[in-house]
Every structure is written in C-alpha cells, then in structure tokens.
Amino acid sequence: GESVGLHLPTLSVQEGDNSIINCAYSNSASDYFIWYKQESGKGPQFIIDIRSNMDKRQGQRVTVLLNKTVKHLSLQIAATQPGDSAVYFCAEGDTGGFKTIFGAGTRLFVKA
Amino acid sequence: DAGITQSPRHKVTETGTPVTLRCHQTENHRYMYWYRQDPGHGLRLIHYSYGVKDTDKGEVSDGYSVSRSKTEDFLLTLESATSSQTSVYFCAIQTSGRDTQYFGPGTRLTVL
Image (cartoon, rainbow over all chains, first blue to last red):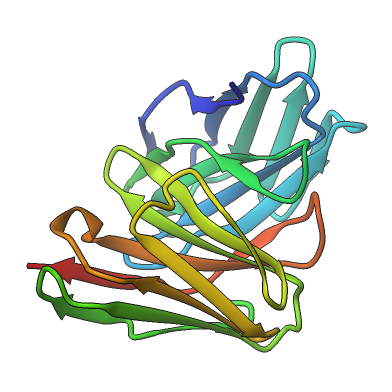
C-alpha cells in the first residue's frame, strides 16, 4: 500500500548550520507533498508544499526538493535556529481523493 | 491555528463513559478530519467529512463515531471510552482535494 516514511527518526544539528530532513514515498502516482512542523504540545503546522510538476520550491529559510525518479523528498532548513527544534512530518496527498498520508516524523534537535 | 478550535483541550474520563470532542472552524472549509496521535504511530485518520452530513471512515474508526450537522462543527464521539483511546486528538480542515490540511491545537484525552 501507499506509505510515506522518513530515513532518520532523530536529527541533531548545531545552531547556524543547515538541516536536511529526508523522506521516501512509495506511490509513484502521488502528485502533492507537504511538510509540517509540530512543536511540543501543538498541532502540526504547515511549512511548505510542492506539486509533482516541480522539483524545487523555496520559502523563507526552507527549501523542499522532490526527486520523482527515486521517490524522495527532502526539507532543507537554512541557518537552523533553536526555534526550529520540533518534529517534522512529510505528507503525501492521497491520489484517490482528499486524504493526506503522514509519515512517522523526524525530531530535530538544535544545539546552541 | 487557522481558525480552528477544539474543545475541550484536556479531558480525563473513566472507562465506559461516553465522550464527545468538538471541532469548530470559522473558515467555511468543506473538508474536516479527526486524527489521533500516539507515540510511534504518527497521525492516524479516524473519520473525515466532505460536507454537511457526509462522513466516512478512516483507518482507525472502530469505537468512534462522528457527526457534522453544519459546516463549522465536526463532532467526534467515543460511545464507551476505553483505555486504548487515551491519545491526543487533532482536528484538521482542508479547502479542497489535493490541498493543505490545517490543524487545530489538539485535545488530550485520558481514559482511566
């Protein structure tokens, strides 16, 4: 079945460094992908999305890369800050309709 | 939280009692979702709604029912709560298919 997974459950980076969070998906027909950030005690918060007709999209300090050939998605955070510490989820829009499939999440720790 | 509120935010109840969680949106979005989040499982879809009085089951719907009598409210009911339903429950809204979901702040439910 369809699945969205993450390569690393925990990532620790130094403040000021760049962070890269990776995600693999299995449904080659998927055409919409989203990254969410979840801080402790809060609901997931939308960060950035990308559709399959693109391979890169940039936001404020964040970039999402999509490699459809190997079914891989990544989130890059530039100049990581302590406020970036959170769990990051990749998600995939269900091709059959309007559901979203979430990965298990990667916890990002930012060391001062 | 994108015009989404959940109530109550915290609840402790006993096994066998009925519990109703409420999700309220001010965005007039068509789609609404209930998820539960547990350690090691990420976000799992319980039920969703694609319009007033139109609902369907998600992957973990056993023991739960929902109702949507008006656009802005989506209710989740545990008819007879069990300890396995101790979890954090999130409501989400979405404008249209293949679009971003926006989450509420969550309800922490403890069933003793």
